[in-house]
Every structure is written in structure tokens, then in C-alpha cells.
Length: 354
View 1 (cartoon, rainbow, N blue to C red):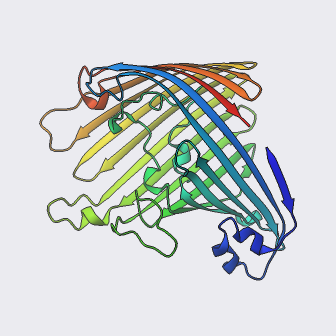
View 2 (cartoon, one colour):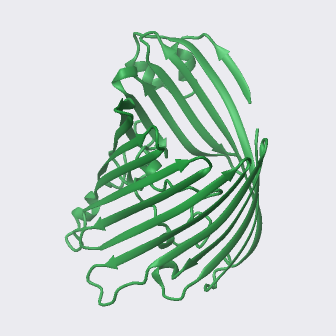
View 3 (cartoon, one colour):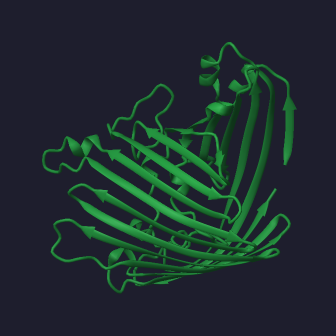
């Protein structure tokens, strides 16, 4: 990791894309700006087999991904802090995989602009205990119906979070947030631009409680999505939907347990519910985990009900300094709610952090 520290004014922060912030905080200056860069690479060997003729998910593959992460942070004369993060996929053509700007306001809380991913709401879409990844993330079926964790997805890009300062009362730490996205389910607009699709807006709320002595964490989330395009469509007035999630997580010693439920209602279209259960145990540098998820979908107006999607994954990870070796054996049944459609995938991954 390389680290550079400079005592510069606000114009140094502009160099990493914070010019908009400089305009609103013109009367204060940054006392110090710290820049850091880190990176990583992962190589995977995967084989998949399922009841589908799609070659991309049936076969074997040796792949890799390389990423660089850039961070900048500084403190202003008024005590506020400013931070910026960007993740860059360097495998092939460079692309921005994640980027956020954060303004810490002390006792007033935190504002975070989520240019690409990073919203607090989407951060609790799946809080399970896993050695490698989520049950659905290890199954490369390419079918959206196999993903049980959709909460917060409509307010995850081009949105802004407000997060209260963590507050402790009688041994319980409380965190809460509200996220607003003026263009729901759409990537952030370019500087000075607007969304051409008039997607409507979304607002999401999260509330989390952590008991400091027992390690029990409870979280709740609610998201409202107002789809203006569908709402104005006379033939298909489905303009409003909402999503909810709730979870409980317990950690003691090397053991972690998690249980989560989520539901989504699309007015006049469909409703779906998901359940996610996982357990992980760490012994020194070695972690084992088991996770499963179920998705129940109901198409309103359909004459027959759909079958539930069932995901299952057994995983292991071993950490050796900057290198981690991980493995996952995953399976989905009734993929995309098609009875008998089964998919299996085994993955061996070796990752390096530098």
C-alpha cells in the first residue's frame, strides 16, 4: 500500500472529483489530505452443470479479476471530514466498479453520495455469515430470479445517504439511515445531467440495534419505489412498489449465525419473499460456512403458482497473510422458478491483496 500525505488547500481535493463540495464549503479549507491506494487480484477455477443449454453456465472456466482501490480523506477547518473512495476494475478495459463521497459532520451525522453502489440500504441486502460469498453469488446461472437479496437495489446509484451518529443507550448501539434516489433503479446521471427515462424516485430507511455484551445484532429496512414510467402507462399501472427486510445476527467466539427475511410487492404485478440462513465458524486462519436461501414468487393474475427457488452453498476459506484460498460448492434447485431446473457450481479461488 502506498500512502502520500499532503497539507494542501481545497483545490487539492478537487483533483479527485470533489469540486462540487468545494463550492458549498468555500469558506473552509482542508488542513490535510491523505491519499492511499490498494489493490487485489483473484484467480478462479470454476465448473458448472445444470439443466440448461446455455454454454456460459455449463462447462469450465479459468478466470481472473484485478482491482485497484483509491481513497482520499481530509479534515476541514470546521471539524468536518471529507472522504472519497473509488474502486477500479483493471481486468481489460478500465471501469469504475464503485465510488462514493462521504462528509462526516461530527454530532450532526454523515452524508454520503453514492455515485455507484455503496448505499446503506443495499448494504443490508444480505448480511449472512459466509466464508466466500453469498449463496446466490456463487451460482452463475445468470437468472435474476435466483437472487434472494434485492433490498436497496433501487436506491444504490446516484443516491444520497444521511446516517445518524452511532448512539449507545443502556448497552445497545443504534444506527439509522435514510437514502434518497431521484432516479430509482437507474445509474447516476453525468455531471449536470438528468435521467432520460424518467424513472421516478426511491426512498429507503434502515434501523440497526447491536447489543454490546451478547453480540446480537438486529436490523430492519424499508424501501419505497415510485416508478413514474409505469405509473403513467394506462395499460399497466404498476407505478408503486415497496421492499422490506429484517435480520438477526449473533456472533460469539469464532461462531457467527444469521437469519434474514425480505419481501417485495410490485403493485398489480408480482410479489416475492425470500429467506436466508447461514452459519460460519472460524478457527484461526480457517473458516467454514453453510448457507441456504429460498425465494417464493407469486405472479398476480396467474392461474398456477410458481415453485420456490432453493439455493445452497458450502464454503471454506484459508488466509495466509496477503493470500486467501477459498472454495465453494453451490447448488440451486428450481432455478428461475422452473420446476426441476437444477444447477450446480464448484469454485476454487485464490486472491491476493497488495
